[in-house]
Amino acid sequence: MDQDVSRPRIVVGVDGSPSSFEAVRWAVRYAALVGGVAEAVAAWEVPLYGWSAPAVDMYMDEEATLEQMTRELTEVLGADAAAEVRTRMAHGNPADILLRAAEGAEVLVVGSRGRGGFARALLGSVSQRVAAHAPCPVVIVRSEET
Image 1 (cartoon, rainbow, N blue to C red):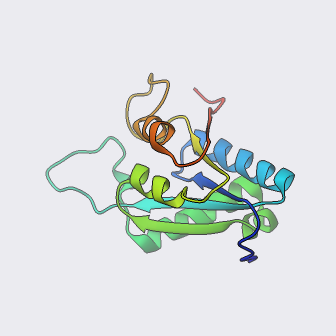
Image 2 (tube, one colour):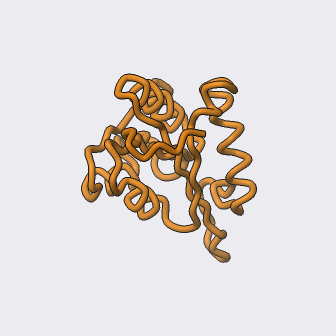
């Protein structure tokens, strides 16, 4: 993969949600328009025992997260385009990880809502937080799925 640091970096959060898929598509198209490189970022967390999450499968280990992200990028973009996307993973809170990844980026792209939370919410907690605190412009992409 191209490691040219002079190219604009387009960071996109990936979490397996429909709006995340739309965000990936948007980020890859934008990267092509500006001659940049798309960097997909995913977070993984260890489950909190004694607490029931709305989407338990969001808590996986690093290897499972990498496998899922690779599979999702290939499904969303096709194998050739997915191979051009840089991938990055980190353990911890998704908003914190995205904010750190966005340092020095041209733009940070996220889906409007992830896999957890309230289905009726216009924005999820991660998209709200990165919109308020990102060190670069933020694009929040909605999914057509309800």
